[in-house]
Image (cartoon, rainbow, N blue to C red; front, side, top):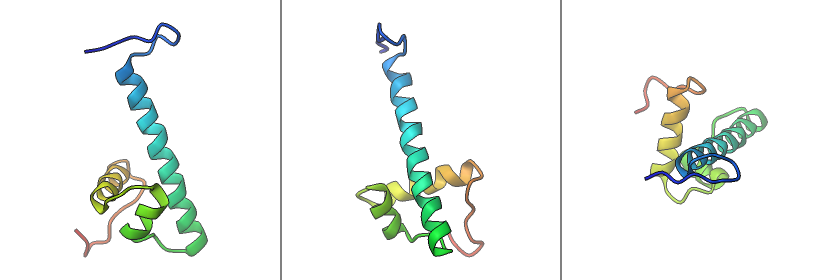
Length: 79
């Protein structure tokens, strides 16, 4: 199902995807700011507070996206 917004010409799916990308970018910036100010990466609990997520699973998915994009990497001894 795809519905086009007559004002923008964007489909709902594309608009949602764009908003999700913007949300992820804002979350990434908050994590980067934490890293710059504290000289360490935040824990998953701290990332929950930074991003507004309600679960560590949601944070893990964001971290996976950041790893896949080459923005962060995991330590060799982490899962």
